Every structure is written in C-alpha cells, then in structure tokens.
Image 1 (cartoon, rainbow, N blue to C red):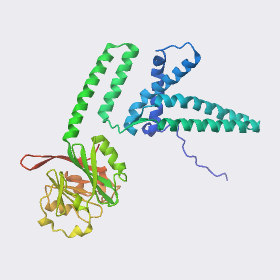
Image 2 (cartoon, helix red, strand yellow):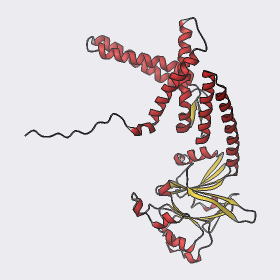
Image 3 (cartoon, rainbow, N blue to C red):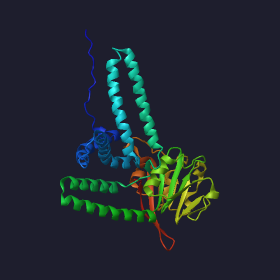
Image 4 (cartoon, helix red, strand yellow):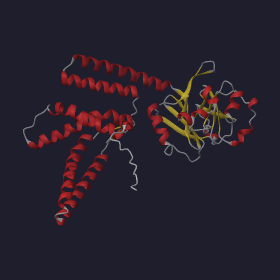
Length: 382
C-alpha cells in the first residue's frame, strides 16, 4: 500500500511582512529611487564619463535616502550624515563583488586555478568594502543620534517633503501652498511640544521582570528609582534611553530605593518609607515584610506601587485607600487568558497592572494650596 504523504501548504506571500523594517526600507528606497532619480540626475549634465558616473552614484544615493529618512528616524532615531560619501565608495565595490561572485560560480568548476585567483580578488573587494564602511563610521559627526520626533511631527515632515517634491516635479501651486501650510503647522506643533516638555510632571512605572523601575519626571529632568542596587543608567538604557529621548530629558540620575540618603533632593524627599515628588506622595512596597501593614492606619497616599516581590493584595489596598492610584507589578492571575484577569483590575480605572500595558503613566499638577490634581492615569504610550 502506498503511504499518503501530507504536504504542508506553501505560501507565496506573508501579509505580516509589511511590518518588517527591512521590507519597509527596501520598498521605500526603490520607490524613492524610481520617482526622484530621473529629476535629480537631470539637474546637471557632464560631458565626460568619469564625472557623469560620480554624479550618477551621488544621485542614486540621494534619491534612495529621501524615501528612507522617515523610517530611519522612526525606528533607529538617527541619521547618517556621510551617506553620500559612504555610497560613493560602497556601491562600486558592491557591484564588483556581485559580478565576481557570479563569475566565480561559473569559472571555478572549469578552471580551478582561475577560480582561486578570482576568489582572492573577491575577498580583497569585500575587505575593501568593510574598510570603507569603518572609515566613514569613524569620521566626526558621522551619525546624528538621539532624534526622537513624535509620530505627528514625522507625518508632517513626510507630508511636507511629498508636497515639495510634487511642486518641483509638476510645478503645482497647490502643492507649494500645502507644503507651506504643513511647515507652519510643524513649527507651531514643535513650539507646543517644547512647552509641554518644560511643563511636564509625571510618574511612569515600567514593567521590569524581578525589579522595580520608576521614572519621576519634572520638565526636562528625570529621577530613576530602582530596587536593584547594581543597576546603572548603562544597564537600564534599553528602558531609559527611549523614554529620555522622546521626553527631551537633559538631566537624569538613578537612585536605589534602599539608599535613603540619596532620596533627599530639591525635588524629592523621603520620610518613613514615603516619598514626596513635587507634592505627589507615593509609596513603593518592594519587600514581603510589608505584608503585615495595618492598612486601616495607613497614611493618605496618592500613589501606591506594589512590586513583584511584594505579597500585597490590591483589593485589600483599595478597600482601605479608596482614592489612591494603585499600580501592581505582579503577574496577573490567568496571564495569557484575558477572561481570567482579576475583575478589580478591569473595573477600577485607578488600579493598573504594568504587565498588561508594559508601563503605567501618572500625570499630575500641584496646586498653589499644596493640593495636587492627578490629571490622568493609564498605560504609557510614549
């Protein structure tokens, strides 16, 4: 009897591929090259072959870079300043490598000696390309780093670039008008963003497995609180760098919660395990020994942070502190099944869990009479 062989279906397309960074960069570069290169290349004419080839390489690089700039800013938050020089060196070497590789596959089986010689040349071309890339990387100001535009600002930049391009290509007055309006809106929004950064007061609790990480931000300064004594800014840069970049932070410091001597600053002071940050009172419970707390006698607090190592019941805390914002870092019961999550987490707008949203954000504003107003509390999204 002939056995039946089950064949797995083969797919010729993957819809989720559109979210891949490499896919987006590749198609953006090709589309930008096809659209912009003829117009950029036609701006100048060179009679001799060598200048014309150099100009062609430069226009290819510039045309492709125009389409990839938004993706570079959005995903990598940086811009290569020497891209024209880099592509002027890399593109010819890449062409040589591709041609040589094809020739080697054909010649090596027929003439082994010539195949070995071409392989050595291929290796030298690869080494030359790597050397040129490292040389460009070591040049001063080779990369503009720390670029964190908001999604709306990035959209306005892309819209302005498209409208200006349409004006250059088709000489459309409407495109020029739209580009100017987009630039004006961009400038207004940028000024509002600067003001927002200067006036920002917020507390963000991050979901860091086995640890507690809290950002206390006022204006362009952030104090990082952590329960790990060995943590530094460099160790936590995966969390701190993007946050500080989008918030435009100019000054930051990190303090261990057990180091009470450093918890007293001009913006933060500690008293009996309670912290006061610019008028907002908060308590971070990180040890199991706090399980014996008499919540009926617990002082009035604006923010309670229950860490993974704490054995507190959020429901019990809420019963005795009805007005406080409670942030729980424990893995929720039935994680992975939303139907089994604690009902109190789903129904109480001031009881949040960092494992559900990645991070929790509290915005507040102190009043002149010493009171404070919590403007919003919810899951953090940049």
